[in-house]
Length: 190
Image (cartoon, rainbow, N blue to C red):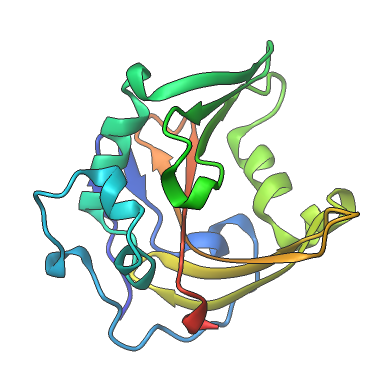
C-alpha cells in the first residue's frame, strides 16, 4: 500500500521517500505499520517521542504537524553552532531519549540547488564518497512514505554504533527546501 502525499504546514510528504534522492530501493512494506491513531492525543509531543511505543510506529501527518510546532518554538532550543551557512540547535531538555542528542539543523548553501544538497547528504552512494564515519545504509522497509533506515556510525576510539530510524522526506510547498525527519525505530524491526 503506497502512501499519498499529505501536507503538514508548508511541507508535503514525498511518498517515495529516499528513492526521490536517487537511492535504488527495493524494500518490502512493513506488515501492519502502527500509526498514531492508537496513541493518546492528549500526551505532549515530546513525551510521545520519548516513549518506547513511538519507536514502533511510522511517522504520520499529525506527528509532522506536532514536530513543526516544536521546531518553531524558540523557547525549546539552545544554540549549539551557528555560522553563515548552518545553524544547529539542541533541545533544552537534556534528559529526553536517555540523554541522546535531540537537534534541529538548518542550512543555506548558496550557489547550489536543494536537490544537489539533498543528493550529497542522503544518496547513499554519493555519501560514501565523503562520509567516512557513517555508512552501512540499508532501507529495510518502505511504508506510507516512511523508510525504515539502518545505518552504522564509526567514531574511534569508541565502538561502532548502529541506528534504526523511521525516515521521511518532505518538500516545502515553495519548492525552496527539503526537510528530512528521522525518529528512532525499535531494534526489533531489524
